[in-house]
Each structure stands twice: as structure tokens, then as C-alpha cells.
Image (tube, rainbow, N blue to C red; front, side, top):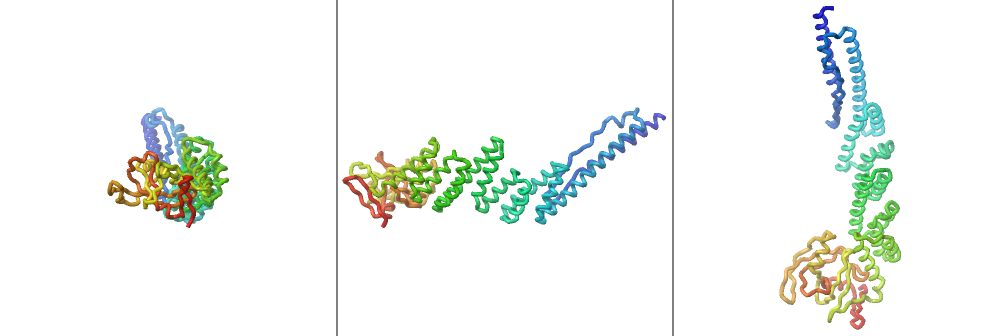
Length: 411
């Protein structure tokens, strides 16, 4: 065979290989779109010897073998790509037709051929699920979740989306159950801590809502099952203790408080609830007062965690706390200004402002959404403020000066 002929064959072979590679690359660039949701480009590139075109010693037999292998690979990749494209298009069609079980069947088939493609389809379905929540298409998402989680009950991404859906439809108790299901099956410390943190945040948010509604029995129903999963998380016990105090089931409240391991983070709340219990127990016998000269000081509890020493002042129309005590409230509570006031004092008019206390307790007696004035109180080193008539007017009250006792009875 002449050198010219070999060169000619080699050149034709190079052109053929280059053309096949170009066509294969174009075919493998798959785009599947439903409402421009799906897009997937495969990156399978057939590697060839860069020196083939310049190898003058290549024989026609070797060239034929190379072409045969290339053509076979091309056919296999093309066949697989076509099959995946067909499955994706069908899965997409079924998904948007709300035929979820059939769509999931096709997703499984895609995963058996190409896991990356099935993951991309799944990600797009998750994005649609999140959009359903935003658009309040709850029944649609519920139907898909039921079908999907029946097939893949431990799928973390879809379980997380189910939590979001349950919160959106106001079922936080079921959402908490799923959080603890995820924690139990995590076997990964970072994931456990992340889900525990999210569960605790959800709990605190829902408990705050129930407290504002004074739904004490609902707090008990929500909190009790959680202790089984996380007995060492004090806020579960604190919420139960507080709810039972409001329902006047003091012994039960005491039992929950005794279960809490004392720590710096919760000592203030524990002590405040114990003080509240003591005041309720002693209420019928009279509230012990501390005498300060001609005045009497009584202990009150604000928002179930701040203990204040208040001087009884029947001449004050509103209850007052000092600026310093107000700063303590701000450290833990979300306090908003109610209104600005001009206050008549012995030194003349002073500008002040008032705030709203969610719960104001004194000896087992509570007033909710209670207005308290904040102002500078000079020479008040023994008290945090004044107890005014806006509290006392809710009761028949009597001060036993001889025994330093305050009696409060309902009107």
C-alpha cells in the first residue's frame, strides 16, 4: 500500500471520528423541559487518542476496529439517552397531571438507569412542592407527600418539606413528631443537633402563641408527648409546670419543676415559678409584706420570670417600674412601648412612657395585658417600683398593718 493511500485513509478516519464525536456530544446534551422546569446536560465525553489522525503506521484493520468500538459506544449512549429522555418526559407529564404514584414509578426507573438524572428531577419536584406551600395548595402537596413517603419513608428532604407543610396548616404537634423521627434515624451528630435546634425553635414559637391565647390545656397536650423524646430539655418541663399552675394543679406543677436539672440558663424561670406557687399557696392566709418605714413592699412576678419588689401606693393610679428594672425585662422579653405619658410627681410633671406586661402575678392573682409605667425612681434602693390602683382595683383588698399582710379577694 502506497504512502499516499495510507495518508488518505488516515485523514478520512480522523474526519469520521471527529464527526461522530461531535454528533454524540450534541445528542447527549439532553434538555427536558416542562414549563421550563427541567434541564439536564449529560457530560459523557468519549475519549479518543489524539494522535490517531497523525499515526501514519495505522492499518485499515486497526482503523475499522476503532470505528466499530466508537460506533458501538455511540449507539449504547444514544439508546440510554433516548430511554432516559422518554422516562423523564413521561414522569413530568404524570407529575403535572397529578398522577403521583405513576410519576414516582417512572422516577424509580430513571434512578435505575442514571441516578444523577433522577436526583435532578427530584430537586425540581421539591421546588414545586415549596411553591405549593407558598400558594397554599395544601391538598395537592398532601396527596404527593402521601404517595412519595409511602415509597420512600425516610427521605430527609421530603420529610423536611412535610414539616414545613404541617406548620403551614397549623399542625405543629405532627411536625414535632417528624423532627424526632429524623433525629432517631440520623446516625449523624451534626444532623441530630440541627434538627433538635429546629424542633426547639418550633416548640418555643408555638408555646408563645398558646400562652398569648391563655390555652393552658393546649400547652399540656402539646408538651407532654415531647418529654418522652427529649426528657432533658427543660423548656418542655417549664411549659407544663406553668400551665398546671394556671390550672391550679399545684402538686403536678411542683413535680415537673423538680424534674428539671438546675442550670444557669433556666434558674430564673424555675425560681419565678416556685415563687408563683408559694404565693398561690399563701394567698388565702394573706400575702406577706415587707415593711419599709411607713410603706409596705410586696413581691410580684412579671411575665412568669422576673420578680419585682413593689411598694404599695394606693394613691398611684398606675403601677410603675424603674428604668433599671425595665432594662432587665428587655434582656429576655420582647417589650413594646404602649404610650407616652406626663406624670405628676412631687417634683412636678415628668415625661414617661408605659409598656404592656403579658402576665402580671401577685400572690396567685393574675392580670393580663397589664399596663406599667417606666420612669426614673430616685431614692428607690429597696424597691423596683410602685404597685398602683390599676392592679388593686381588680380585687377587694385590705392591708393588715399589724401583721404586715395583704389580703386580696375577688369582687
